[in-house]
Image: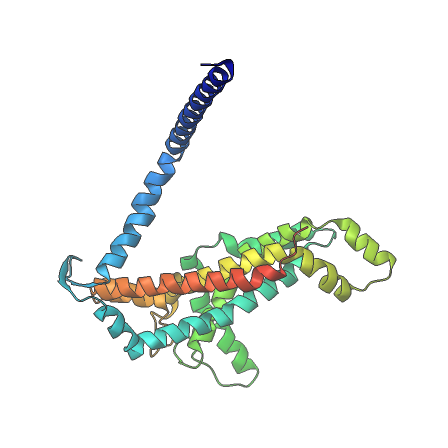
Length: 314
């Protein structure tokens, strides 16, 4: 065996040992990472992964009142749902609700945030007022809006009477119920959205506005050319979160209308609740929950596909 062969053999041995040591190090790093992640993995498994798998499983069965599976029906629950006029009404009402609440929440919050971002004396008080709805629970806010919408003593109908108009059944008239719930939801959501947008506004470099002032740019030009583009990551976030929250709305529906009148405000989450805990049809409710999950997933993917193109990162 010549010297060159010996050197090559020793080099191969060293390389093998090095590779074994690297694999061992990777295993140790992976084990450490799993140990650090184990509390989160455990919590996610108990409260997210297991309920999700259980819901998908139940959606293929009929169940008794205790929620135990009785008969395997395959896709029949899904077929029954999409042939049900009540569910289709619930689906259309949900999309209308998203259409009503999303633009209103974003536009009003942006308007208030732009005002609150000005360096004026006492502006901190207005910031507190604008964000105050975030500290009010859905139940308390719903009670407040019940009084405002009351057909006889409510503020809105008293105002209409003063102006000479007929009173409106805000929560009892099918033509007004969904719009009324949407208005209350916009008010409830403004606080959170306002704070996020205000934080985004305050992160914009002030030198951009100073440069625009030098060339004599007006307020709306700066809003269109500086504020909106620089705020686009924040707007992308709040729009995505608002879409998800709108699809998951439940509390104010339960408090204000109970899904009525004539199922006009029977949004998907409330329909799931009623199907499971009023009618005890857990299989059908699980199928609706799976459909809701798919809807939110698709809407979120569309938002990422279309909305992220217009996001300008500094």
